[in-house]
Length: 135
Image (cartoon, rainbow, N blue to C red; front, side):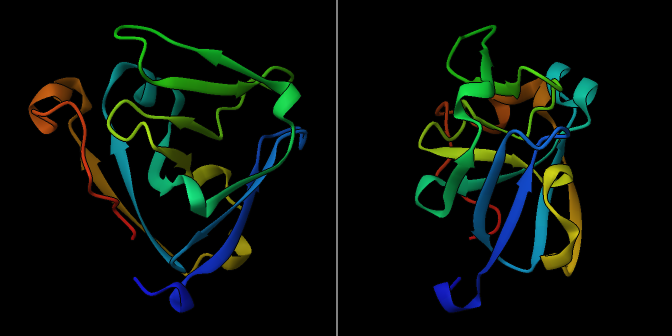
């Protein structure tokens, strides 16, 4: 998608200590993953390339949780517990942003696409993907 078609979306955690911006399309395609962590947290993810993500504040408020292979870096606010974004195993050069944590003013529409994260290895046989859902 051409840069001129992207808008600046803002978002953050519940308590507001963590704030970020992303450049993305006004109509979002997000994945609803059924893996153990996404399904329990209600995460609606969209992969954002690192150059299109800016952490505005709260780096000192973030804590990291890793499990299984230890590649994914699940970050959450140490004060309110909200996971606004994380570095995914499938795209270690990007962020997976929780669309539920974006401010609604710049979002035209959200399309939710189911993703079978319980069988992650079959979705990404090479261990990662170069596909970005919105870009």
